[in-house]
Amino acid sequence: MHIKRAKTLKPAQIRHLLRVTEATSRHPERDALVLLLGFTCGMRISEIARIEVADVLQPSGLIREEVSLRAAITKGCRQRCVYLSHPKALAALNRYIEWRWKRSKGTAMDRQKWRGLMPQTSLILTHKGSRYELSVKRRTNDSGEQVEYLAADSLQSYVTGLYRAAGLGKGYSSHSGRRTFASRLLAQGHSIETVQILLGHAHLDHVSPYLEVTEREFLEAIEGLEEMFATD
Image (cartoon, rainbow, N blue to C red; front, side):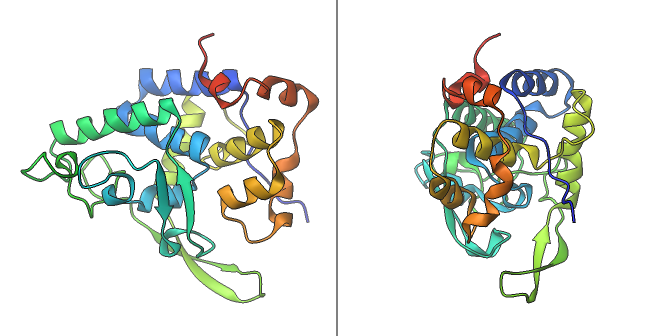
């Protein structure tokens, strides 16, 4: 059985997607951050929808470079760490925090703690200031058992719409960010084991779909992840 997989993006396509999102989105501060969390951290949309302010900020307001994704919010129900260290992602997070504060989206009175945001609120909020709705899905786990997990269908559809608005249609979806993150790391020569850990997969064979990297993409990747955001 052929499994449809989201296409990965080339550096120029990533820059184009971010430019169009900045120019056309009603909420570019939030939407750019959502896209960058996929491209630079390899996060699933459901994980992006479920992380909370306290997951990414310390009480002092400093950003946590190492973000622990609780087992309860990952698809595989396995805790893992992602790393908020890319300059573009950090800038987008800082901008979004200020955007939330100025518009009183899940904010507290005291700006001295958590940058004025309520720590247990979802980091990514809808335009109404609420968390994105989650729906219960079922899948077969590694042991062949049926297990339930939560999916953020509305945010997933919304992000896929951002791709459509940028002219990235058939084959591109909200999962393209995570796949691009993995394929670029592999293209740069990082080990499959490293990518496995960063993606949170239990088995190496789950990483094999990310090995579809052409020779041209290997050459494009040698400059590192920063190349994705270089000025044209």
